[in-house]
Image (cartoon, rainbow, N blue to C red; front, top):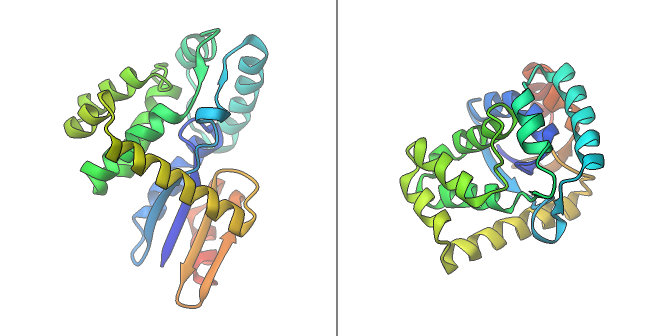
Length: 210
């Protein structure tokens, strides 16, 4: 079975879904395809300000209560508190695309790492130099090099993946991220997003009914 995971690396709910997504990727018979949507990238990016920071922190606390995922005081002070900094998922997404090109079997690991560095370590992964440093520190040397000096192949791969993810969102009527699309020989369908915040058994049962 192919499962497409629609997400954005700066989406707090996607970070909250991280443990279930990781478990899902380890289920026998499941091939998980990461599909970054660019929800907060490029033209969808915005500067951080006090109002947006307060809204984000309130939302993050809901996610923490539901999932147990950590949103640290360092994240609140150094990321949400960085007034004027950009809320832009393009750098982190570019990092994931670079990992897909250079170490594809480790892409979920890279996503988890880039989320953790933001929400726990309090480093702004909307900064390309931070993304490159994080990747290099974790042994993604080639991906880090390519992120530092993006070439046309990397940029084209970035555009292709984001465009493909957006087409899938439109095709299945996904209202946002995180979302899952399951596909097997009998067809494909959009799954309920709330399955990503519960017990893996409930999600596995839904997958078996596709």
